[in-house]
Amino acid sequence: MKTETNVVRISRSLNDRLDALAAKTGRRKTYFASKAIERYLEDQEDYMFAVAAYEESKGKKTYSLEEVMKELGLDRPLHRTRAKRTQKA
Image (cartoon, rainbow, N blue to C red; front, top):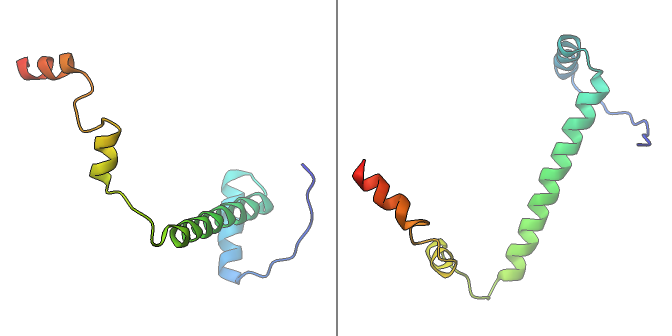
């Protein structure tokens, strides 16, 4: 994977925590900084996707969890034999 160098300013206390984590784990600070940024971006992208989906759904029919479960047949026991065994126990 190709990488690029970026400069990010962080507080001294955050840098100290990053130093301590790197020292404890034997990994570089850049590893943890990169992972943190990656997770943050994924969360923000998920949030933006959810907002867009919500906006798109305005005015359209929505379904309750109970309706979806019933439609998918999830409102019934999966195996009747399992239910019988449980009653005997």
